[in-house]
Image (cartoon, rainbow, N blue to C red):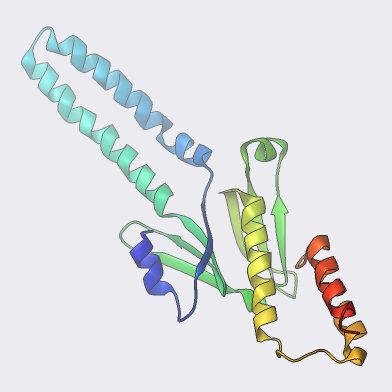
Length: 207
């Protein structure tokens, strides 16, 4: 997905927070056969060129087939993107015909991430976006940098909630209730322990 195409989808005051694709190993598995065939044909061209120009020319034509398939696979992988904005999560794929699915951050209740041992080593994993009913809205498989993707989602959702809160000084009687709300967000994974403690200290300083 080109930057210009993404910009056309963004709403007013909406900005991109993080962009990810499927892990590079997915691309390698897709193009491995094409790479092997290309190498074999290149070797055949070198041998054929020593005997007859006609066979060499045919080999060059045949070489275009795996190269075209390789280019197709690279473009498909490149245009399959997962985008976190300050309002939603966007999944898009397709080179010429675009298929776009987005989920509003307001509807996201939790984010589930799964990483195998090799996923932690090579930095890939599966991410599920869950609603309040614990049903998955979207499942992104073999996504690169899943921890950063999940963190970007949760941080964007937190900022969205903060921006929508009334900007008025908290009354002393409101502070315990606000701390309780922050604690619930911490338990849900929306706030980290460090963020919770920092906001708690800010509220306590107003008492």
